[in-house]
Length: 50
Image (cartoon, rainbow, N blue to C red; front, top):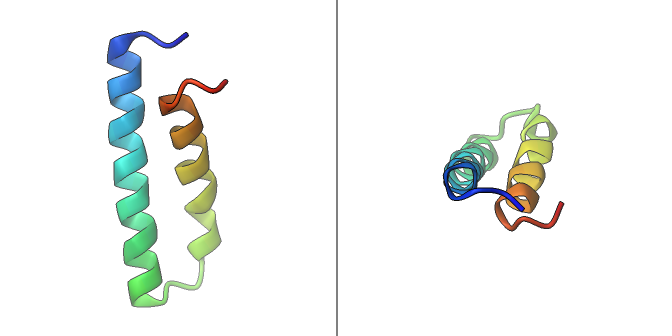
């Protein structure tokens, strides 16, 4: 189980990577799929699934 400080950091990183992903979609960035692993990984860590 992740501690409170780590969970907060993971939630912040998830929100930042999600914002970057949405920005990449809006601007049509060709390397869009490079951001997706960060979104998924930080979400799983924030939800304390692994």
